[in-house]
Amino acid sequence: FAGHNTQESAWEEFDIEQALRQALALVEHQLDKGLIETSLECEEDLPRFVGHIGELEQVFINLMINAQNAMAHGGALCIAARREGQQIEVSFADTGPGIAPEHFDRIFEPFYTTRADEGGTGLGLAVSYRIIERLQGVLTVESAPGAGAIFIIRLPLSEEGGE
Image (cartoon, rainbow, N blue to C red; front, side, top):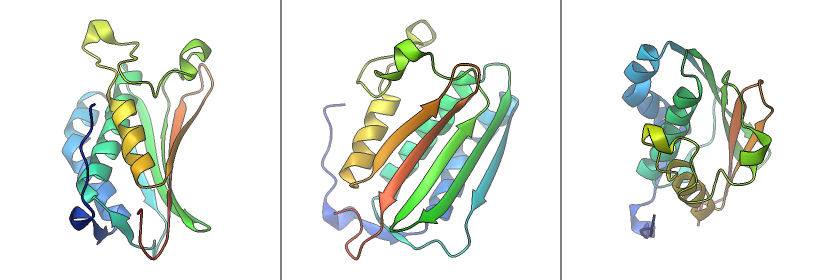
């Protein structure tokens, strides 16, 4: 978690939908094994984004794996991407039990986990938060106990991308 610097030279223009599809392809077997139905809905003609595709795919994978962990007995994960004004919004909505109010304020803290006994490190969301922050975006969550969780990434569109 100490971090690494992404040099601007490693940044490139890429298609968010393609990055989502690549991340989903990497974890789809694991999600299928967990009896999790996935859907991916991307708005047509999304603008290309400038950033580090590998890091953004890491965020997508972290959010997919977290959803899987939340839905231990199966469920559904709906991933959607759309343009919202001068931003691209990517959401990950699961049908898990939601996030308990006592954990809500701490989920993005490094090393905070409710799954320590299952091997959780508490780094997935913290690292994801930092990556999105570096892209000048925001990562938020909406959840109510018993009603699943929706993690939302909002990334700014600009001539220079995320820098």
